[in-house]
Length: 105
Image (tube, rainbow, N blue to C red; front, side):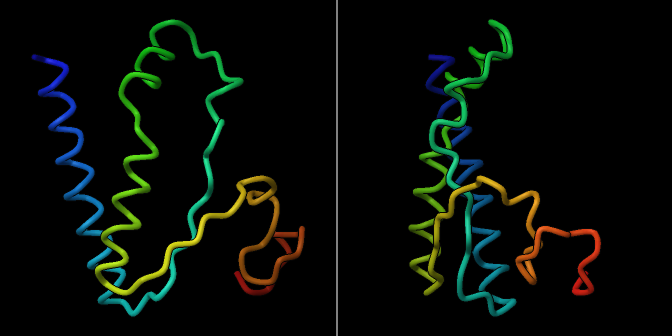
């Protein structure tokens, strides 16, 4: 019963947060959302017994992404999933590998 209550609260929080975020993006005129693909990101991580239990039993990236896609579609916003590999070392504006030296920032 406690697990079910926790799950329902989590899903309600996700639904509310996603809807508020998408509404704000829509008001700002955003037409596309680019999201990193986190598939298999937990496969090689071992944060200890307690941490692994919390991550694997509670976090639901698939549910979050499904809600983002559904709500964004309602507002006419497209959602694109991209590979996360190397995204921290590239400038989002010009694409160069020198984020610190980029004049766009």
